[in-house]
Image 1 (cartoon, rainbow, N blue to C red):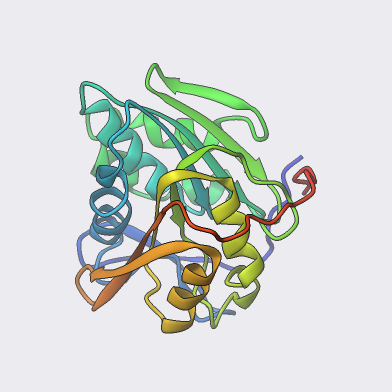
Image 2: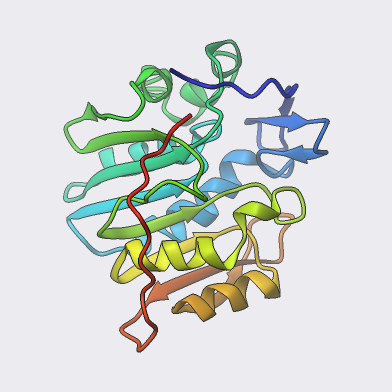
Length: 242
């Protein structure tokens, strides 16, 4: 059973014509007001997905949110001839249909398949759902701090709210869980380029680099899991619960 967050959200239009949501209580947007779509494409598709050279990619997203990253990933995969994605995503508070139905991503991002966006949101939680032949979706409802992550991950979208807004999602324990669940040479991308985040991910074992950011943002971070002597911590397989 889904647990919805009662916090108020406001629909807003960003500079590239795509929607985002604003949380007045947190004074936080889900995406950049300079362009939600172009921000996600720059960080998660170009810097992340296109950096993984595998036919089958096991992907973990921290924060399903509006589903924009998933939709852009689906569109990209369907536009290639060789790749398949198993898309795991963890979200504690799924958005209700009353909000997702107002977002313009379906028509804007995939005008040939506008139904894909709602299919992502309507897919059952905590089970694998085939969206297309090359895109398998596994939405996990739970708290990333306490639930087990899927293993053998090739690509990580780290897309929690900003550290100053949601500090519990930017801890050394989270960074080490991400490193432990990743395959060798796995890629991690995040919009956050703070020095403390970079150093924390490095301490967990990722080799980090700063890359140019999308419009309105100077830098983003990308990491790779290399073979190192860092000990991978062991975490109990606690199921994700609402």
